Amino acid sequence: MRTVKRRRRYVGKHVIMLVRPVFRYSKSRHAYVLRVVGRRYGPVLRLDRRHGSSWEGTERRGGRAKVA
Image (cartoon, rainbow, N blue to C red; front, side):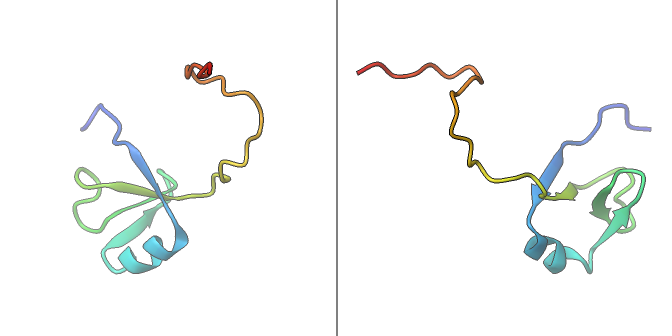
């Protein structure tokens, strides 16, 4: 069994609808995986429910502010 988790890729609803014939929903992963071989191989897709970047505060994720 694979010990390293596969990275989840967040995609929009329209992408999920397009790939639905070849992907199935996995309840244990809360994500879509390839049919037949998805247990071990292929991408893991999750519905993008994250909110847009409407943040107006100070950037705190390591980026330095440019000083003019």
